[in-house]
View 1 (cartoon, rainbow, N blue to C red):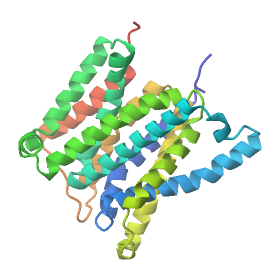
View 2 (view 1 turned 45 degrees about the vertical axis):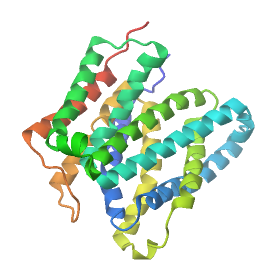
View 3 (view 1 turned 135 degrees about the vertical axis):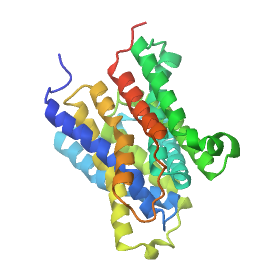
Length: 309
């Protein structure tokens, strides 16, 4: 029996919505961080998502007559997995935005693409899966693309270890933490829904970032920055909802392939639309080809099938 509805046009639209929202997210975050520090910005993202999702989950549970989430998560092992996954996601968000502060939107989006690639490779290391030849070619193209894109910044990333290089390393580490979170999420979804787990994670993030947030600069935000901050908070909620719904209509591999376009959306946006104060990566034929290789490698690994053990 098919696990998808087959409404491929709707699924495609939803997946493209997610890719577009994630593609412009780092640009919006850059606009907010011109005044607000990264940690406080991330606190607002978690807090807004938690406050909006909580009443929805409560009302849905009451209408469906389904047992409350807490009553279904009394297992100490499950609670420990929830906490561990939440903390890994918190670390992912923190490292990503601290890295974004030191780099550019395009560089951040290309490097964070290592997250799904690491998740795929974890299947080889942890579960004994075997990648197909096409998938290994995709991995090779992905790594080669990163090398080409960051070649002009080779000294900054690997030798000088200046702010830009440290930022890139932080985003790569964020990708590692995301892969760990995604592995735990697979186990959690056997007992809880994706929305229920995300609600827990949003509250964990809210509580984790609250003590380190600085609200003294809030009065300095312009009307545009307030709008960007609200957008950043809504972005995760809407993008994730669109992503989950897209998975109900088309295959996960096709959704992943569409989401691989995210870096190209970021690159196109920052270079085609002049944004005051936004530092962009210099585009050459080499770096552009590198970005295309990253996207192509991600799409190839997503669309190719894993060989059975």
